[in-house]
Image (cartoon, rainbow, N blue to C red):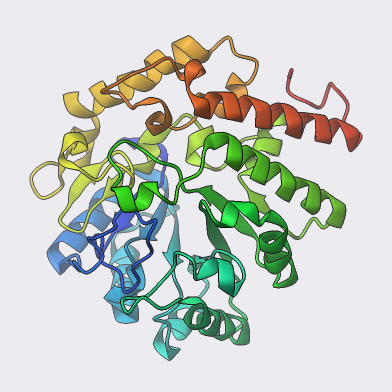
Length: 372
């Protein structure tokens, strides 16, 4: 048996590239959604084989664009290939992030197998969701999403969700919280933040890091009042875990970008799904095995930036919680700034302090809280 490249590997697989049936105006693929490039069979087999040779625990993340465009039978093929390639004792899981608008009985039959964990993209009640999540005709997609959710519920399929917080919805934390809570949908609140490479249409919908921190704190206050352990909100759950000395699950708080490599539909390998451009292309699996890509100069130069950042940040009281955050927040490896001077860092420190104070009010002792 070959030596594993990773202990745990969570590849993000773009089986349809940027292709999507919706036209969400904050999407970082804005303008590219009509380009549907489904991963061919030869590339798919190669990707699965390479990933399954990489770690004893592989967590496939099927993302897009809209990954369900490939069809339910495509994913049955994925499971069949996995069953042939997977080694004895190897742990493999699958998760799929979907807008839930293309679901049909074939999809429901597949997802009832419980081999996939499911995330639904929904931004809150109809008037908030439809602000940015529109279809190709410019109409809101909320009712189509709700039909998909009804299919899940009727089949007893569990799911979580991602809600993107934009310049409009950031003003409605209460409405978003109670909508999700009353529907019993645990969710991850993801900020729509601007990066230099984003198109102007996307930048108009962005919020500041401090706006997002205040939004999260309002969610936390509402969540704590429910005293409901069955409901979950990320990234708040991860921040609380970090403060209590536990292992977060989100990549930005783990300090381990390498385990989340992204593979595009043509086999190109990138650091993550927010860096799908040629400046950050580490190679293609059709020409280079994954092990060699991981050992390549390009990849190691990129991740050297994280080492520099961690050296700068290691004396910060919050370092054990955030590990410096996402590389993209402080310029990435090709334009390194002092992460402590970014607005992301300042907003995060404010958020961590406020969350810690609320945890103390819940009765956790200083010994239980991780030296912060």
